[in-house]
Image (cartoon, rainbow, N blue to C red; front, side):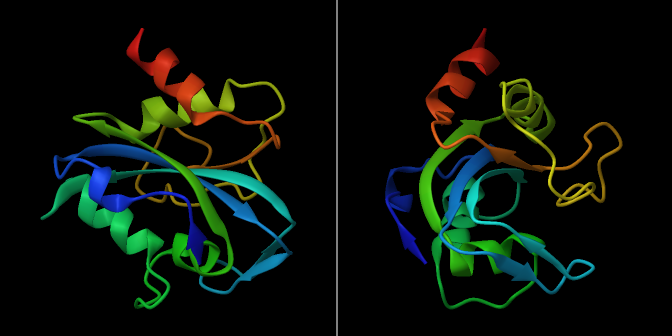
Length: 142
């Protein structure tokens, strides 16, 4: 995977993050009930409360060589990370709510990345080409 994000600039604190991924071609996800995502831009919202916090989790997502454990691993192997938003102490559901409030977003796979969440339709959203994670950051801090 190519990326325009430097994981060394991400804090090592625990918190939540949003990862903007561009898929240059249709991508089949085989760990979920098999589904193919069309070409386009997607935002995945997750949390990192384990060792190394946000920096370790995001760096893992950005690596090409990794065990394929999570649904997102198939997307990050085929796509390009265009931006990351890290919120130390943040909540992934609050980030997701801000993402899906943006006009033109949709939920491509209900339940994706949110098997342990009872409030979000998914933690993956399809977003418009001009989607700006920085705008989400401002909304979640208000």
